[in-house]
Length: 223
Image 1: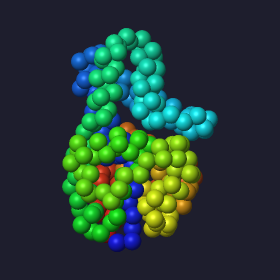
Image 2: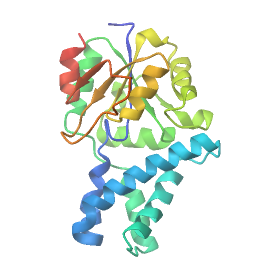
Image 3: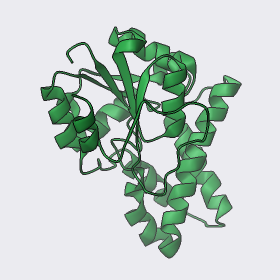
């Protein structure tokens, strides 16, 4: 497997974006989980729209503007200090519990591991260092280098160029179905991590190469 490269999506796949819920519960109480889900959905929507419009801003700006939208949607007034606290939490979100063990096993099997994200490289580096897994990756590839977002075909082409690998030797690992369909459309293989039993894969003509419920199950499938 030394020639097989695994590109891991970060937000939602390695890093739990619901890590903001505890702080949100302090600020807004029982609306916290719904608020977190809306914030995440709008964050992704804004990145998609920016990509289509070719009006690029960083993923952090999309996240901040999505936070403002979510406050308006739920008719909640958060102070600038509270919003800054929430944005700061995004910089140190926790990893899912299976991440370190699974990445270690995959590296030991000889896979080439990369982190591949819509986030800026320095933000992703900080998250991976905080999670204690940065040393397991050969590198971090960010779409910020080309000023667009996944699932643009250019994003996956950028990854393949940077990792010096062709599509037939590269897998995209993601819990986001848009990322899976985008990578397969760009000529890669892809594994969908169904992090929640409520998660639904988009019912398109494009299917993931494999489906698993965790990164540890992925280790068993890739051998």
